[in-house]
Every structure is written in structure tokens, then in C-alpha cells.
Length: 195
Image (tube, rainbow, N blue to C red):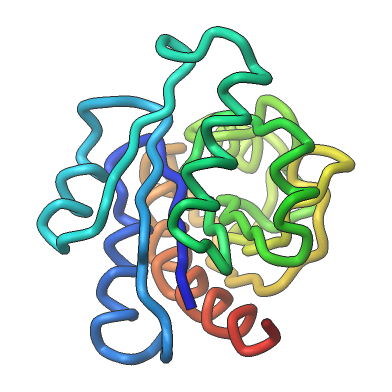
């Protein structure tokens, strides 16, 4: 099975996937492509070190949204993508992408959906919202990406962490990240079993 991973940043979740494919925890699969929304991010270096093909499709190079979507779909098709994993991809994609990969595109979100999801809930904003709401726990969610909205797809797997006294958004983010690194590979393996 060919996995294409969509990224925008440092790629710690990408690294978790690379490691789990390498050790057989995600069986019968290979990461065929790492597609980044930005050039110069460390995800691309992680992919190069693992001899994985990379492509950058940025708003700068594709200011027209339809042309950018065409380029993304073409890159995914070229690698014979069976499953798309959005691992810190910080751009809201056109509904055409989840339609093309219905039931074969997943995302990791750093909160317990349906809480603290949707447009504007990304990065530290999510953890700020958790703390502002006075939640006693947080965590991460892997869900299917659908064409109905942002973070609206069916939940595949969740992992929980406590919110502790004295937590800052940055401290909470690091605690949640350890859960992300565990459940994203688990969910990837689960979804691949169903394909």
C-alpha cells in the first residue's frame, strides 16, 4: 500500500510514521510521497533522509486554488496513493481532495474532537482554547477527512492526556504530541487493513 503524507512543518508525526513503517508496525505499506505546503521545512529533510520522494505545492507557486488542487491530485495519483495522511498539514484543502480519496484520507488533530475543532483551531490556538475552557483533559484525534467541513469527518482513534495545573499552551502541546506520535501510526495501520 502506498501512503502519501501531507505536511507543513517540522514533521514529528511524519517521523513517527516513517519509524513505524520501518519496524513493521504499519505492515505491507510504504511512504511513497511527502507533499509539503511549504519549502524549507524540516519534514522535507526527514523524507530525504528516509529516501522518500518529496514535492512542494505552495500557495506561492499556485495562487489559483483550483490549479493548486489539480497539482496536489496529480502528485498523489502519480505515486499510486492508496492512503493520504495529513500530518500537520496546515492548509484547508479543497473538497475535491477528500472526494477523490473518500475513506482513504485521514488527519491528526491535537484535541478531543468534536471539541476545539474546525476553522481557526490549529497549532497553539487549540491548546489555548482547551486551557481557556477549563478542560480537565485533552488529547489528539485521528479522523477521516470529508468534504463537509474542517475536522468534521468520522473519528477513527483518540488518545487522552490530563490537563495539569500550571500548563501553558506550549507545555500542553508537548504532552499531546506524545499521544499524536502513538495514535497516528495506529490509526494508519487500522485504516490500511480496511482498504
